[in-house]
Length: 117
Image 1 (tube, rainbow, N blue to C red):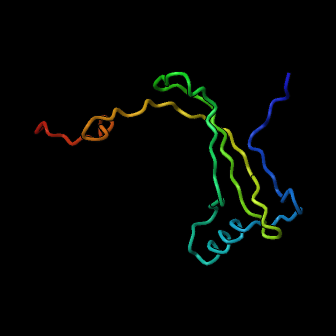
Image 2 (image 1 turned 90 degrees about the vertical axis):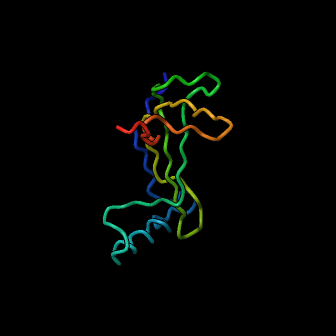
Image 3 (image 1 turned 135 degrees about the horizontal axis):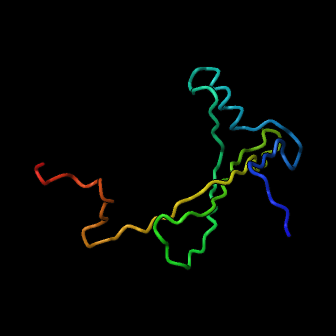
């Protein structure tokens, strides 16, 4: 049996050169100090999401599935783009909207009320 992975997974240094200085993290911290961003905000250089679901199967409304979210930054020393954190969250499957000749049909609740009530 495989060992269970504990999330979040964090990588504190560049896998290429070992530096702990990251470009986006440094610039975001500078913007916080200058008052251009609120405290305790994190903005990665890149975010990817991997949905762990069989896309060959029809989506069942409100079906939950795991999602891995990876946050990347760039090493300020050597320029390597690397994953600095991986989190696991839960996604919720939603069926694709129906497309008619006139375009997309918005979900119920977003249509204007024309009943006069």
